Image (cartoon, rainbow, N blue to C red):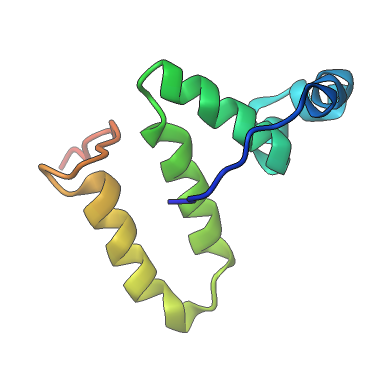
Length: 96
């Protein structure tokens, strides 16, 4: 749900590669803004950018004031979960 990403320079890429704390785990990569840019760029090339975008949206949701969650949660639902949405993610079905 983030827009306006800029292209990172070669020096930024070198810095990212040298930071083992950032690149050693996916969670570490996604916590770093430069890591997010490169991972989303990779996912776009693989036609799977909806997955990290959904994860980032959920992380934002968790940080929100509870009074703002309903509206944002509905936007997330309509973007990633609702049947027929533009950017569906695969989520496990709940079994009764």
